[in-house]
Length: 54
Image 1 (cartoon, helix red, strand yellow):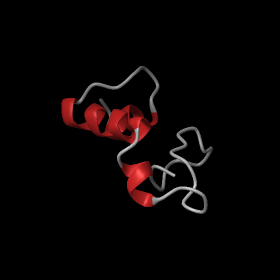
Image 2 (cartoon, rainbow, N blue to C red):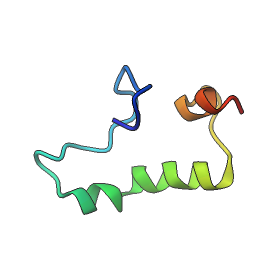
Image 3 (cartoon, rainbow, N blue to C red):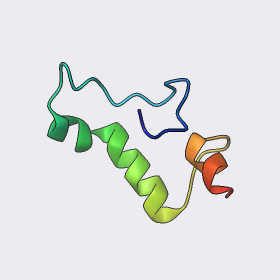
Image 4 (cartoon, one colour):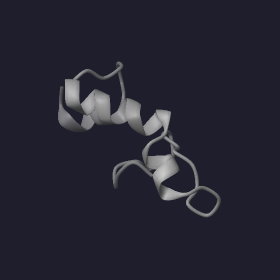
């Protein structure tokens, strides 16, 4: 899960049961999320955009 507001598992980074934490954290999907937050640019209706009120 991305955060506590991620009720529907719409953003999936993988499972810590089958994948190493660093592999998930350094993966493409996690990098996309970090860049969105760093740049303040989110796709329309993205979970983070709605939460931040952008």
